[in-house]
Length: 161
Image (cartoon, rainbow, N blue to C red; front, side, top):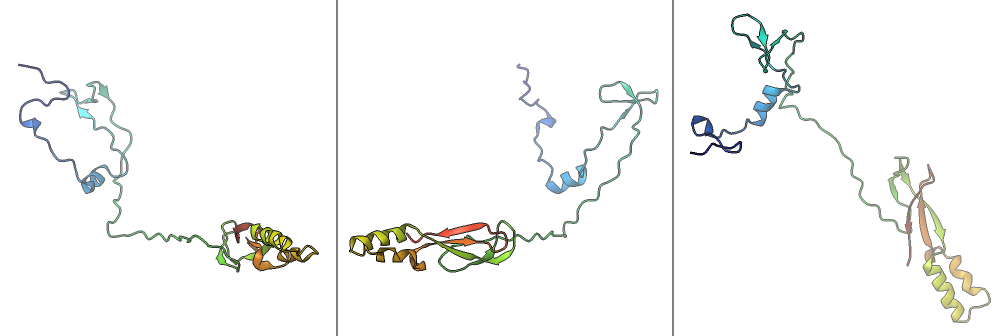
């Protein structure tokens, strides 16, 4: 006959597995705070003994039952999700991530790849006498930067090419 190890259960009625307690039972029994260990009365002396068998004083604290939250109460939390903003060549109404205010973006035009490509192609076509610089005056050929009018933060850029 072999001796059962710590991982084996001893034969007998205690070897039947039991289901763990439900969530409601766990919350109702444990509450929010762990319960202190219950002292055990001694044999005939009237002294209380702890789990190790030694005498101990009665606890000097008292626990109060903690109210269980009402199962019917539902906490409502409002979450605002901002969709990704697509920047184009016109002002965009949005919430500024820097100052958290609803704004309409201010536009700033800067020379980009399309502007320089247009200038180079006009130069190759023979517009050398200054006409090749016309793309730098046309907003429709330049990149657009979007700024917040309140905090002047750069919010995004629209690149034409």
